[in-house]
Image (cartoon, rainbow, N blue to C red; front, top):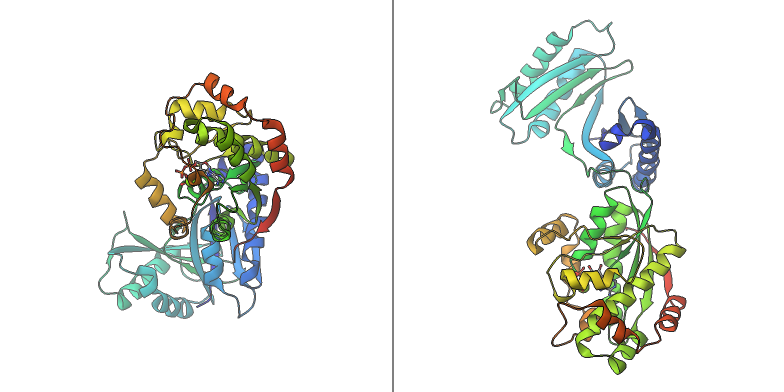
Length: 391
Ligand code: ATP
Ligand code: MG
C-alpha cells in the first residue's frame, strides 16, 4: 500500500541561524538518497519533510528504510492519503488499523482540521475514527492519556491523511554539516562503530585502510571494502584510501626492538592518515580505540600514538565495553562482516611482550633507527583511492 513518508527533524531545530542550512542539507540528502527507489516529490512543509511517491512503481518501503538511516531525522511516520469525506476516511482507517495498531494494547484517535470548512469538527471525527478502529481491532483499548499508538487523521486542503505509529529515526545531524574526518578503518569490529558515532554528529567520513600485502590477502582487503559499504549506507559514498605498510613493517622488524612493533606501526598509521586527511580537507582522525582493550590502548600507549600527529583524534569507543561495541556493530549491520576471519596488518607481526607502558623517549629512540620521513612519503605516494557506494 503506497504512502507518503513524513520525517521530523531533530537537533537541527535548535540551531538558530543555521537552521535553514541544516534543513536544506537534510532535504537535499533525502532527495538524493531516495532516488534509487523511484520518482519521489521531496518537500518541506512546516517542521516536516514529506517524501511522496510520484508514480505507481515507487519502492516506498525501500525509501522508508534509507530515510530511517539518515542522520538528522529523529522520527518517521507513514501517512496514507485518502479522499476528503467521512466514508472514504473510515474505510481507509479500517483497512489500515490492523497494521497501525500492531500488537499495541492502547490507542487513541486524534483528528486535526486545517480545512475548517469540513462538515464535522475534530472531536466528532476522532470519535468516529476511534469506533472504526475498535470495530476491526477489538483487542485494543482506548487510552487518551498515554496511548501506545495515536491514529491521527488530518484534514488538509487537498486530501485527508491518516498516520499511525511514529518510529525513531537515526537522530544526530545531517552528514556534512560538521565538516569531514578521516576514519582509520580496519577489518575489526570497533572502527565501523566509531565511524558511525562520529558520522552521526554530522561529520562526513573518508576512510583509510592499511594493508600489508602479501602478508595480508586480497580477501582481507575486500572485507574492509565491504565494511566501507556499510559505512556508505549512512555516510553516503565513501572515498576509500588503501595504503600499503609492507615496507614499513619490514623495516620495523629489521631494525627495531620487537616489543615496540605495534606502537611504531600505529604511529606510522596515524601520520600517514594525517597526511592524507590534510590533502583531503579532513579536520580530524577517527579510530576505534577503546581504553585498555589491548596493549596499544593503555593511556600510555595512546599518548605515544597521539603524539605522532597534531590533528584532533576522535575515539568515540574509548569508554565503551566490548559488549556495547558489539551491540552497536549489530545495529549498524557490520558485525557479520567484521567477524569474518581474515588477518589484519596489525595482527601479522604481533610482539610477544608488547609495551603497555611505553615512554615517548624510548619510542623516539626506536624510531631514530628508521628513515621515517621517506617511508611515509613512499607509502602516501603509492596510496590508492576509490569511491565506495552502498548497493
Ligand atoms: P578494530 O576492531 O576496529 O580492528 P581493534 O580492537 O582490533 O579495533 P587495533 O587493531 O589496535 O584495535 O586498532 C585500533 C584502531 O586502529 C582501529 O579501531 C582502527 O581505527 C585503527 N586500525 C587498526 N588497524 C588498521 C588498519 N589495518 N587500517 C586502518 N586502520 C586501522
Ligand atoms: Mg583491528
